[in-house]
Length: 264
Image 1: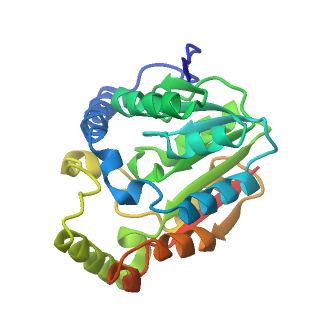
Image 2: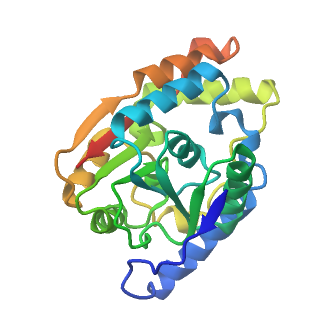
């Protein structure tokens, strides 16, 4: 089951006009993407082993349940539903009402209670929260450091866990080559694309991490935002389980390296 979060966002006023325009374009993009997002096998575990690896990782890095967990950029609910299944009190926050509608449907079907909060990542609900989590969101933020600082304000004594990957410029030439090969194999298999399209270049150029999320940059941003005790970890178990779930020859090309940065 889901609930609608009515608490005021922690932002201090409306964004400048340019930021508001970009925000609306991003919102519209993800509303459209929500209709096909879950069709891509790369947006959800392919196997029970991969699901178990993600659940074990989340259980290890979150505070003991039940904790108040804010999932920012929750999308269709990958992390939210895992955390709720572990017994946490989860608030799923996302800019896209289309994505949140899909999350609500899935939570209802699974018998899980998740509080729904619609809004920009830099304007989280007031909290306080025991933990803030995100997955593959940082690249689409116009002000990642400011946004991470806003999350710190709603979890002043809490924990941060960001899940990211070495894609694009963040992964280097070798990973970029392997990524192109993986995409070619997926097209030959006629797999559904990960997304319906790409951001407009005018939006993409406003994103500091729009070309990749190298771990050193993520660590520096988390530290600059005021989160203490920053830690970096390779998600080796998740990568192993994900790779085993892939068919040949895609399995031989491996998977995008994944990591988490935790703090607090």
